[in-house]
Each structure stands twice: as structure tokens, then as C-alpha cells.
Length: 103
Image 1 (cartoon, one colour):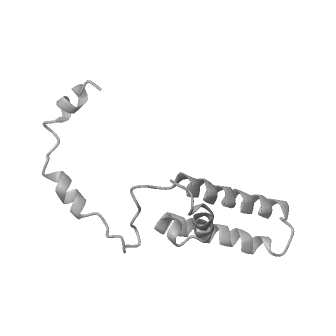
Image 2 (image 1 turned 60 degrees about the vertical axis):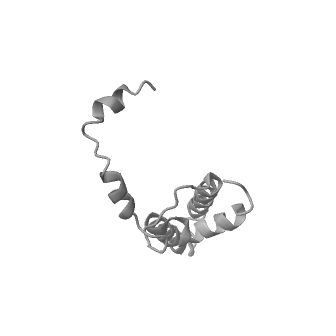
């Protein structure tokens, strides 16, 4: 890191912008708040549970419960997009499983 790029862009970067950007950050109670640190084991757990659910839906395609399973997977995905693992059922399960582990 020689700092050449930072020196070239220094005239375009205003130091006054950073404090204002920090003030505009959503609070922890906000629906769109995401933590700075993310537990990668929880993310892998959520994706593993989502893949298992999708394989279950594919394997039992002709069964009556499959449309409900696919609907649940779609709702879980939408909840993860909106609020991360806080509202997602698969995210909550993965968080409970991986809670004792370090991020």
C-alpha cells in the first residue's frame, strides 16, 4: 500500500462527510439495521438450512406440502433481505445452533 491512490483522491474526499454519514446510520432498533460484525458460522448455517429445505422441496415435489414449503422458503428469504437473521425463521434456528461459537 503505497498510498498513491489515496493521495490522488484526497482532493475529492471531504473529511466533513464522514461524521454526517455516521449520523445517518440507522439505530439498532431500526428494521434495516445490520451489525458491523457478522458471525460467518450463522451465515453458513442459514444457507445450509435453505439448501436442505430446497432439496426437500425438490425431492418431494409431488407431495401436498411442497407448495407451503416453497412459500415458507420465499418468505424466509424476504425476511432475511429486510432484516437479516433477526426475523428469519431459518436465521433464528442457525443463530441458536451457533450462538455458543465465536464469530
